[in-house]
Length: 505
Ligand SMILES: [Fe+2]
View: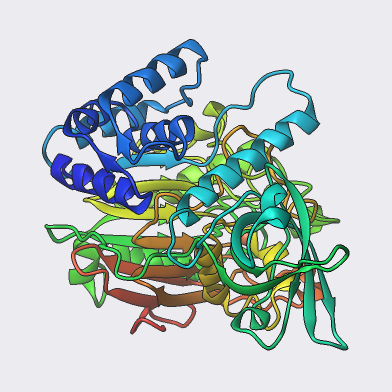
């Protein structure tokens, strides 16, 4: 992203938060290594009091950050890229934010989770505050004393459906307290599904009598704002998207992989497309790992995890050396399983060629100014059972719901472990132009309010464990995105030769 683009992006970001940013403040923000993260911290610190963001506010936030050592660990790559962001030319790669931030040492787990949820509420309520649809906004504890109609921004603690009456009863909370809400089926609001731990704006008809519940009359989710400006590369550049290689599995699809390598080296048809590729993004489950599910050892061709990464290194060296490869881990990789996950350890990353950039899961970065979020997608395991009609076969439908909530995995206490970090790194902020996931081992391309959604297959055939879980993979697909237009081409290597498809593959 060129410096002018980043400047515009920051102005738009503050406008989205109903703030005007002074020129001096903006200039100072742009000198920081992570201007977007610093902007979020300025808003966190300054709250809703002033409509202006001043240079003094930014200075004070920087001082506070220094004093409390709040600076998130930044990989050398991110430092270099952020410097490049300010150098005036759109760099091929710029890290915007990693979901993972170092945990506070020796913190009581209860306190740590409290900080995580407070961070989620703060980040998402900021997106909702000031919406015309949320008039007469009040803290929950003040509701009884207000007039007939009011709004709250709250995190859903509990959802109960009363099927006989087809209504939902919600227990919601904000920093001031909690309350029960009745969601009638006759209004627009009754047709949506509410998920535990998502943050939603509610407009309410206030109950006047004790013992009666406030009635929801409409809702607002954080959402993708309609008509949002998106980014395009000002030069031709294509990116290849892959996921779920599962190196080390007996079911690794070496023949389709060999056909992918032929394609990338321009051997055979469609060489002109391969020539214009510059980046490769791999959305996790780089290796099959060990001990990830019961009796996995039966499915492994390589049973030593270090050896699996050595083999991953060999496989990635088969790609043309000129390609820049960006990887994030998944739930099969050898990093802490709780999300957000850190990048691969130095020992594992050392097995990979030097053209590989290893980031945490999720991560948001810019390629020639186009903003991408790469998330492995373990949140699907929680969201699919919770959303009526959702399935692993249609992963992009679930990704739309993630964008509506502006969160990748909100539900706490299920199969997706959440790391108790001070900043909720699974909140989708900033919004990407391209949102890529894996994990489902299926394939999907779609759009939602200007965001290109990709779920990019797997290079592992069906395992016994997947048969047992009724998961039918759609393997050996890849997506190529032209960053100048965001048009997508699907490549199918499952047959005897590479087949080029349209956006749906
Ligand atoms: Fe996987």
